[in-house]
Length: 139
Image (cartoon, rainbow, N blue to C red; front, side, top):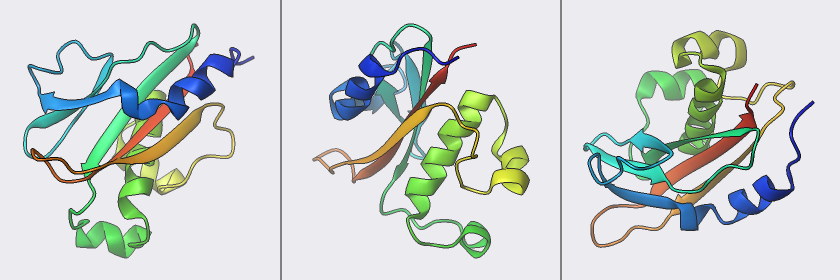
């Protein structure tokens, strides 16, 4: 049985306030992190409700998806689907290469967690980001 979700729903609704972007050293205290291709890092600074594990994944929204992956999974909402799938892999402790044959970039029917994908607007230091936050019961 999954832990109650009441506090988790609010945490995900307020996700923007729990995300920070900086260097790896600046994000060292984050609960969970996602590394960007330019060596910056997105960190999550929100405490999960008891019984839940939270993970994040981020990519630059304007980045060109790799052509072989677009051929396989399609271009529509690619980074949104990619970051969500990366989160689900992290929660399941399964590498993406093992995930693809079974699930592609989709959410498995039996997934008992929750997720939210959002965009962090560009600022003076970086372009817009696509960030997925996902949570699942900690068993």
